[in-house]
Length: 94
Image (cartoon, rainbow, N blue to C red; front, side, top):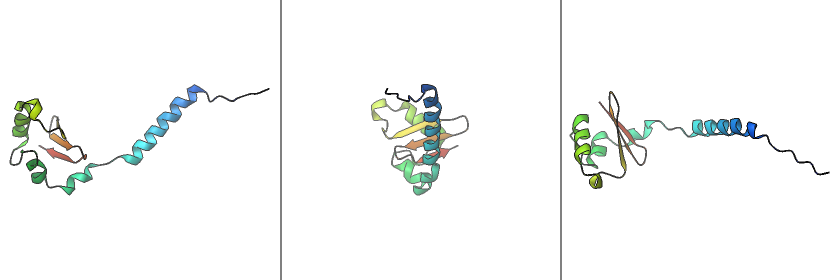
Protein backbone atom coordinates (compact mmCIF):
# COMPACT_ATOMS: atom_id res chain seq x y z
CA UNK A 1 0.00 0.00 0.00
CA UNK A 2 1.40 3.33 -1.04
CA UNK A 3 0.47 6.15 1.29
CA UNK A 4 1.46 9.69 0.64
CA UNK A 5 1.31 12.45 3.15
CA UNK A 6 -0.14 15.55 1.63
CA UNK A 7 0.74 18.87 3.13
CA UNK A 8 -2.55 20.43 4.22
CA UNK A 9 -3.42 23.41 2.08
CA UNK A 10 -4.66 25.23 5.15
CA UNK A 11 -1.14 25.15 6.55
CA UNK A 12 0.43 26.42 3.33
CA UNK A 13 -1.14 29.88 3.47
CA UNK A 14 0.26 30.88 6.90
CA UNK A 15 3.61 29.36 5.98
CA UNK A 16 3.80 31.38 2.77
CA UNK A 17 2.71 34.54 4.58
CA UNK A 18 5.37 34.05 7.25
CA UNK A 19 8.00 33.49 4.57
CA UNK A 20 6.97 36.64 2.72
CA UNK A 21 7.12 38.70 5.91
CA UNK A 22 10.54 37.28 6.72
CA UNK A 23 11.87 38.16 3.28
CA UNK A 24 10.33 41.62 3.41
CA UNK A 25 12.01 42.29 6.73
CA UNK A 26 15.37 41.23 5.37
CA UNK A 27 15.15 43.35 2.27
CA UNK A 28 13.69 46.54 3.64
CA UNK A 29 15.61 49.62 2.66
CA UNK A 30 15.37 53.01 4.19
CA UNK A 31 16.05 56.20 2.33
CA UNK A 32 19.79 55.81 2.95
CA UNK A 33 20.24 56.12 -0.81
CA UNK A 34 19.00 59.69 -0.57
CA UNK A 35 22.26 60.67 1.12
CA UNK A 36 24.32 59.54 -1.88
CA UNK A 37 23.05 62.30 -4.18
CA UNK A 38 22.61 65.91 -3.17
CA UNK A 39 19.06 67.20 -3.53
CA UNK A 40 20.17 69.87 -6.01
CA UNK A 41 21.93 67.32 -8.22
CA UNK A 42 18.95 64.98 -8.14
CA UNK A 43 16.56 67.76 -9.09
CA UNK A 44 18.91 69.13 -11.74
CA UNK A 45 18.95 65.85 -13.63
CA UNK A 46 15.18 66.24 -14.13
CA UNK A 47 15.21 69.98 -14.84
CA UNK A 48 13.67 70.74 -11.45
CA UNK A 49 16.60 72.44 -9.70
CA UNK A 50 15.77 75.66 -7.86
CA UNK A 51 12.06 74.84 -7.64
CA UNK A 52 10.13 74.34 -4.41
CA UNK A 53 7.59 71.55 -3.92
CA UNK A 54 4.54 73.45 -5.26
CA UNK A 55 6.49 74.58 -8.35
CA UNK A 56 7.71 71.01 -9.00
CA UNK A 57 4.14 69.70 -8.73
CA UNK A 58 2.92 72.39 -11.13
CA UNK A 59 5.72 71.74 -13.63
CA UNK A 60 5.24 67.97 -13.66
CA UNK A 61 1.45 68.26 -13.72
CA UNK A 62 1.39 70.60 -16.71
CA UNK A 63 4.10 68.71 -18.61
CA UNK A 64 2.85 66.55 -21.50
CA UNK A 65 2.77 62.89 -20.45
CA UNK A 66 5.20 61.93 -23.22
CA UNK A 67 7.75 64.45 -21.90
CA UNK A 68 7.58 63.32 -18.27
CA UNK A 69 10.64 61.43 -16.93
CA UNK A 70 10.08 57.68 -17.09
CA UNK A 71 12.35 57.03 -14.12
CA UNK A 72 10.79 59.49 -11.67
CA UNK A 73 7.79 58.91 -9.43
CA UNK A 74 6.25 61.94 -7.74
CA UNK A 75 4.01 61.27 -4.77
CA UNK A 76 2.09 64.22 -3.34
CA UNK A 77 1.52 63.64 0.37
CA UNK A 78 -0.46 65.88 2.75
CA UNK A 79 2.68 67.51 4.14
CA UNK A 80 5.38 66.78 1.56
CA UNK A 81 6.29 65.87 -1.99
CA UNK A 82 8.25 62.63 -2.33
CA UNK A 83 10.29 62.14 -5.49
CA UNK A 84 11.62 58.63 -6.08
CA UNK A 85 13.86 57.52 -8.93
CA UNK A 86 14.18 54.02 -10.38
CA UNK A 87 17.20 53.32 -8.17
CA UNK A 88 14.93 53.93 -5.13
CA UNK A 89 16.62 57.20 -4.21
CA UNK A 90 14.00 59.32 -2.46
CA UNK A 91 13.87 63.04 -1.95
CA UNK A 92 11.34 64.52 0.50
CA UNK A 93 10.35 68.17 -0.06
CA UNK A 94 8.01 70.21 2.10
